[in-house]
Length: 121
Length: 224
Image 1 (cartoon, chains in turn purple, green):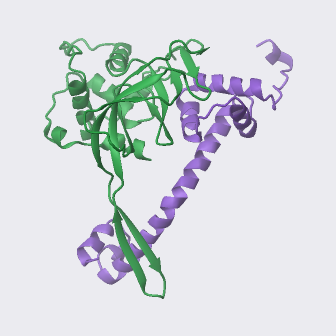
Image 2 (tube, rainbow over the protein chains, first blue to last red):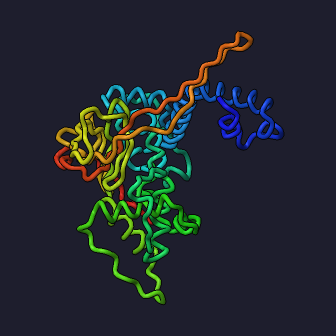
Image 3 (cartoon, rainbow over the protein chains, first blue to last red):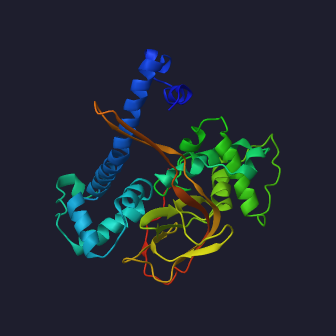
């Protein structure tokens, strides 16, 4: 790549790496290697983020992630983790309906017994 | 994710659009919608006006162009009446106007090319290149996994039978260029390859055919 392209890719770099060609070339090459690697890592990271969110959303309704997904698989619901995490964030009632379906199909988690004042509430 | 880039997409025809926005509240509502492409028009849990009013007052170009798409895609809708500047509309009316003007409170989860997208009528999504589809082709998407309205959710097992999402192919283009750089250290091996993935932009026009499917009724939304 010629120098102009290197400097264009080196925008925002720290110190001499954005202005001096010898240093910029090294840093840009490193940046491109990282982006190659991270295009593959992004898929892994996003999936684990979705799983975290589904876990959090399902635990609000008393079901953990493993049992929730097992129940969905049993019920032949093929929504993927990306969509499930979006539903858990923005469509809470639909997500609760999914959790209920899953719990009915696979009741792995016992609903915790409420004691004292919370039984009345 | 390809669909998350849809808010920033510009087509050459809309690049020269000059728009006058009738009222600022509606712009804020549209900003709120466009700023978070996966967020739904009205949040079921709480319809508080607070998040809308906290949107930044600057109008981004993508919002202007998306507004132009709304006007050109649905010419049969009546234009907004000019409001008196002295009497501002209540915020709930503005939210309702924005919600009904673009999409009728339905959403669907559709599977295209083994990827799933959450889809609203009136918005566009980017998918993998659909071979054999030309511009302005009407498309019917059959793999609808979930349909949600304000009060009901139709959860497919695995598919909502007879549900169809109607869409129009808008553009068959290429994604932004990605530089694939292969490097082995101390061996003098460097390869630079540029790559543009072909993709198709489709605009969703409607969601039909789900009414006869068994549904879950959702509890009433309580606005905060």
